[in-house]
Image (cartoon, rainbow, N blue to C red; front, side, top):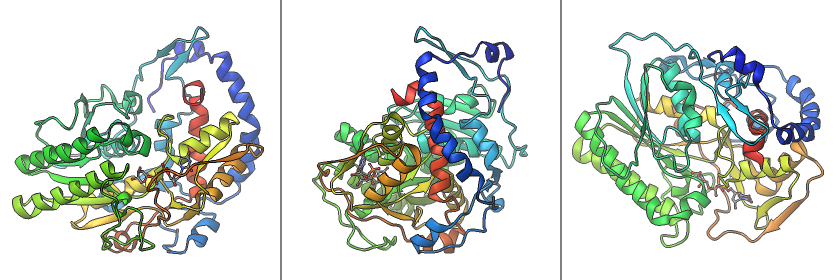
Length: 431
Ligand SMILES: O=c1ccn([C@@H]2O[C@H](COP(=O)(O)OP(=O)(O)O[C@H]3OC[C@@H](O)[C@H](O)[C@H]3O)[C@@H](O)[C@H]2O)c(=O)[nH]1
C-alpha cells in the first residue's frame, strides 16, 4: 500500500473509546493467535473440490495466493490485505473530540504493466460496495483501467479511496437507473442493494435498479460491444425445493412477498440479459452469487455474518431469526472475485453458481462466531422473517467444470480476516 505521511503517522491518535473497545476485545485476539498460527499455509489449487460440507469444514487449508494465472488475476493474499488491513492503518486520525481527519495515500500499490492493446476499460457498477470494491482492487492490480459507477446508497467512497487519483481509475457518482454513456470493453454489473434490510427498505427502487439498471447497462453493452456480466443471486432459487441448487433448477419464488423486489428483480435481470444476447448478440455472462462475506461489509448491512460479528464484539446478544435450523453456505469474498473474473474471461454464457458448499445451520453459525469472538455472549431468538429460505447450498459442478473454479478459502480463514477487519474499524463499525 502506498506509504502515508510520516507526520500523520506520528500524530495518529485513537480516541479513548476506540482504545477501550480494543482492550475489551484483546482477549479474543490472544485466544486466536494460536489457532491462526497452527495450520500450514497452502497454495491455491491444493484444496479438493468436494460436495461434502464436512470435508470443507474439517480442512485446515490456508490460502496464501488468490486468483488464476490463466486470466492474470493471481496475486498474493498479503497484497490484497494491504488494501483493507494495512499494517500501518494510518489513513485517518480519529481525534478525541469526535472528529476524524482522512489522509491521502502518497503512492499507490504497484499494478501490472500492460501494453495499450492489452489494457481494457472496465466499468464496474456498484464498484464502491462490498463485493464491487474487492473486484476493483483485483482489476486495478491486473493493470486495467477501471471506472466505478456508484450512487453510494450502500457503497462508500472509503472502500475505493486507495485508488482515487490513480491514472487508471475513475469514480463516478451516478445512479444506474439513469442512462449512462461511456466507451468500455467490459461491464461488471453489480449495482443493487443486496442485503434483505437494504433491498426491502425501498422495494420499488430495488425493482427499478434491477430492471432499469440492467436495461441501461445492456444497452450500453450493445452500443459499445462490451462484454456484459450480470451479478445475479442464489435468491433466484427462492425457498428451494431442490438441494443443493443446480443452475438448471427454476426456483421457488413468492412473486408478491417481501423478498420479491430482489428475487424477481434479479430473475427479470437474467431474462433481460438473455434477451439481449439472443436478440442483439450481446456477449453475456451471468453469475449466481451465494452468501458472501468479508472485509468492507457495511456495519449497517444487516446480513447474518456482519450482524453476528458486530454483536459478539460488542458483547450483545446474537439475534437468530426463527429457530435457527435454516441453513446457508458462506463463501469468502476473494473466492467470489476469482470466480467473477474467470467467468468474464471464459467462453461460457449460461448462468454459473458461485458459492462455497460449506453449509451451516444459522444456530451452528451463531455458536461458531460466538465461541470465536466472545464465548460468554448469549444468543436470543427473534421471530422468523417472512419467506426466509429454509436451505441453501450451491452445486458448483458447473463452475468447476467450465471455469476451473472452486472455493479455496475455508469459512474459518475468511472469518478470521473479517473479524480482524471489523475490529480495525473500531468506533465506526461497532458503536
Ligand atoms: O441477524 C441476523 C441476520 C440474519 N439471520 C438469518 O440468517 C440467514 C441469512 O440471512 P442473510 O440476511 O445473511 O442473507 P440471506 O441468505 O437471507 O439473503 C442473501 O442471500 C444471498 C445474497 O444474494 C444476498 O446478499 C442476500 O439476499 C437467514 O436465515 C436470516 O433470517 C439471523 O438469524 N440473524
